[in-house]
Amino acid sequence: MALITWSASLSVGIGQLDRQHQKLIEMINGLHDAMMQGKGRDVLATTLDGLVAYTASHFANEERLMADHSFPGQSSHQAEHRQLVEQVQALARDLKDGKPVLTIAVMSFLRDWLNTHILGTDKKYGPYLTARGVN
Ligand SMILES: [Fe+2]
Ligand SMILES: [Fe+2]
Image 1: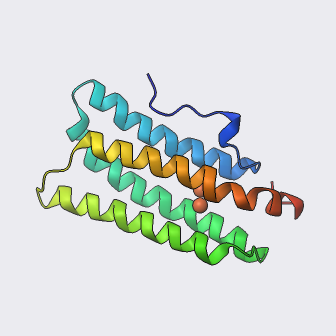
Image 2: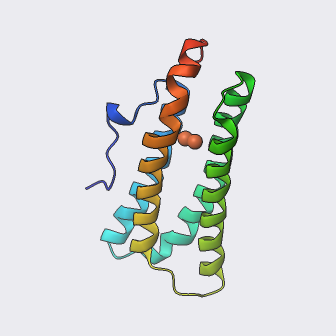
C-alpha cells in the first residue's frame, strides 16, 4: 500500500510540475514499500541520494519558472527549498556517518514536508503561472 496517493487535490495545475511531484511521491512510496518488506535501511541511503538529486532539479525548475514570470512569492519559496535540501542532505550525511537514522522518521518527515510544501507553497504559484501561459 502506498504511503502517499496522488490525487487532484495535490495538482498545482501545471502538467510538467505535477509530473515531477508524482515522481517525488513515487520515490517516497518506494522507500515505504521497502520498509514494509523489512528492507528500509538498505534503500534509505539510495532513496535519500536520489531525493537530493531529484529535488535539486525539480526546485531549479520551479525557481526558473517563478523567476521568468516575476512571481512575487519567489524568494520565500526559494528559502523553503533551501531548507528542505539542507535537511535531506543532513539526513543523508548522518546515515553515511553511521548515526542512527530511523527509516520511519525519515519517511514521515518527507511525507509531511511534501504535503505541506505542495499544498501550502507550490499551490500559490499555480494560478499565477497558469494565467501567464505556463502549462
Ligand atoms: Fe514542488
Ligand atoms: Fe516548491
